[in-house]
Image (cartoon, rainbow, N blue to C red; front, side, top):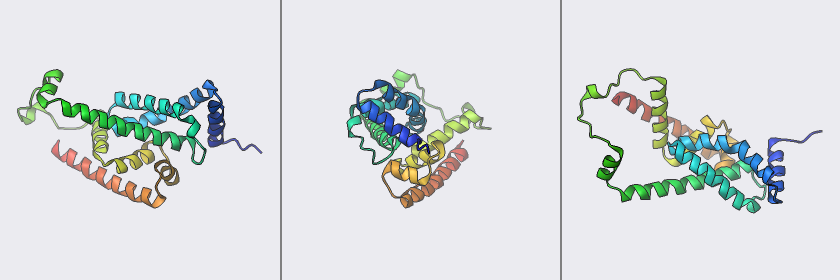
Length: 196
């Protein structure tokens, strides 16, 4: 009977990588890069930041591969590293933002202030790209603990038990946060649609 599962395969690859097999670690990177990237792009609201955080995640994972004990899935372990890297990225971004004034940003980006003219910003009919942008913006406004479970469930397709393992909380907490995340997301989207 073949007991090869993705989790067993990951453990074997981790063991090989811990022994110095670079190709085994590269296989893990290829396996999980896009999955982490999709989640982080939504959480961070910026594709470039998401790419940076994914790279940082794999660097940290490689450096600390010896600490992986196998008491959770490799993906759960990697996801926790990604979340820590994302938090660090957001903190760095906030510090940079605080050091620049609004006027500096306007000059740098060439942003002009709006005159409040409703005809200057047409809000009739939203195309698919606009709807996707609104959803990303609304998700980015959710508190981190709600955003995380929503992204893991809806974008990554994890079940409640997998999410609980990834975030280190009981399944009941996952269910509660997911319910509240969906309710807040719906409310945010309704407000965004009514103001456009």
